[in-house]
Length: 181
Image 1 (cartoon, rainbow, N blue to C red):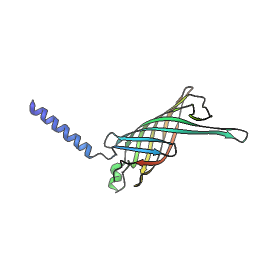
Image 2 (cartoon, helix red, strand yellow; image 1 turned 60 degrees about the horizontal axis):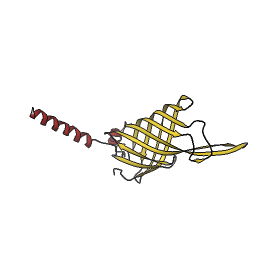
Image 3 (cartoon, one colour; image 1 turned 60 degrees about the vertical axis):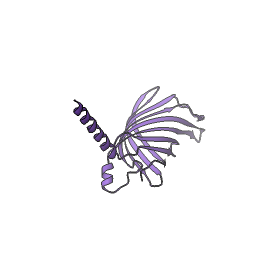
Image 4 (cartoon, rainbow, N blue to C red; image 1 turned 90 degrees about the horizontal axis):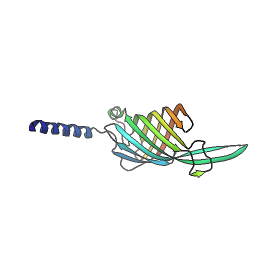
């Protein structure tokens, strides 16, 4: 019995060490976003999977030549699971994977408030929730500049209705420390 327990412990340790050595995503990336002002933290949770948590400010503008122009800044929160599907291929081709530079499939949850923290444009609903399956591309340059685009079908919910639709999300910003070289 004792030999079986020791063997099981050694086997689990070897599997754990092997999976940590094959990790291709960053352990953690802190990013500042410029287009949708905010910040995010991408946490490596597996060899090729991450969780991305973000806080952002959405911007809306409504106006025209025959009416008053209103605007608003709306706080929002997001969480996304990402599965990077081309890291091995990028490594084989000698391409960069630093800063989680790769293509991914993701499951995105976003929540945005309908009342502005700055401005006078108030939405009809008090909240907006997005649940989307996305395909994304993310690239990080050597000095920390990054860009990303993701898109996919989803369900968009507010207090009055639920509608299907397509989400397109574009990101530009900087990674602050923590990248592999």
